Image (cartoon, rainbow, N blue to C red; front, side):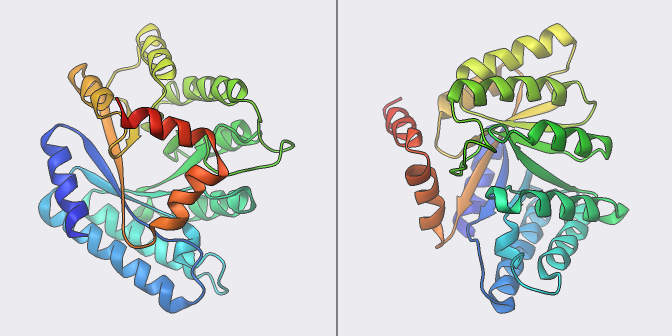
Length: 267
């Protein structure tokens, strides 16, 4: 955690916001869920103490979503209250499609309580259902991070072609930017980023009414360029011992990411 906080301070000094993610997922008992929750409580305390321009991202299976008794909902609601008290924010990451509806339902229930309203969600442009999900979430003013998706899914529920995923991303991006709420656009794709900038300018969308989001260490040049151009940028900083599932999901489940990472190592 100390390393992650130091990285957050360095990024903040460069004009870049941060979301901190203590890696982990699919806990098997309440003790593990409580340990994960304690890490996030400590993170929020440090964000408040140091006045960092930072929030946190978490996975519901890490908080006990697969356990009985509403363990995850209690934990996340508590973290939402803590985030509200310090002016920070909790982002609930989206996991595989088996969890999509349950994740949306949980976030909506928590967001409905005023003192837990600093909570948002992630939607994935490769899922065919995402437009419908987005419309429902926007009616409740829930902030969204839009990404392409990092899980292997069957063709009947997910677009198989990159061109389809990208086209849906751009369509959904336009709805987000004109929704009147503050959202995050998670992408390293320069072609999409240019489309975002062009659409925002043509639609009168202010550059500080949304943010670009990228992974720590990927396209630092592009992150710095966007900041200089007056756009808001947030960098996703994962840390912790549970790095292996995170790493393998991005490389093994979506082989295209191997080439993406390799190319960016040399930029």
